[in-house]
Length: 134
Image (cartoon, rainbow, N blue to C red; front, side, top):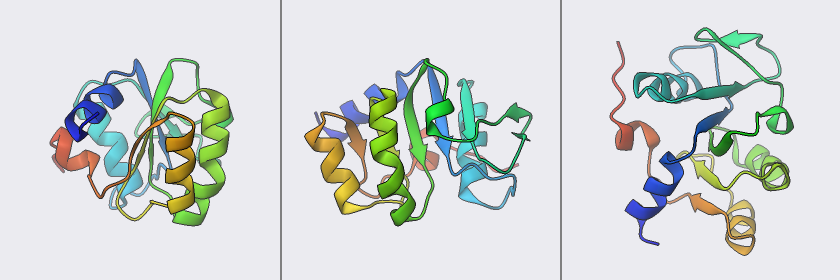
């Protein structure tokens, strides 16, 4: 698959998880969540410390994501990415987008071994989907 095909497959998910969602509107974990909302996508924030973000109820961890979530955006430090990718694969996540700065080489390699559609080349969801900060 070329990058556009990978992105199209990622965006075809019925619902999306945002790992590292943040209540702070200045952080990427919040902007990515709002980007999905701006594009009319069903989105589930993952944050163990917040009951809800941007009016959407949070789940505490990857394992708690609803079945319709097939794509996740990771806005996490690389060490956390490496810990969570195996859980996401176990959960049945098919597409993982590691936002710039979240990439971890072993996590990327694991995704490729398991046939997961992984985007970890520095592409930013906010750019691809046309995020607007208002």
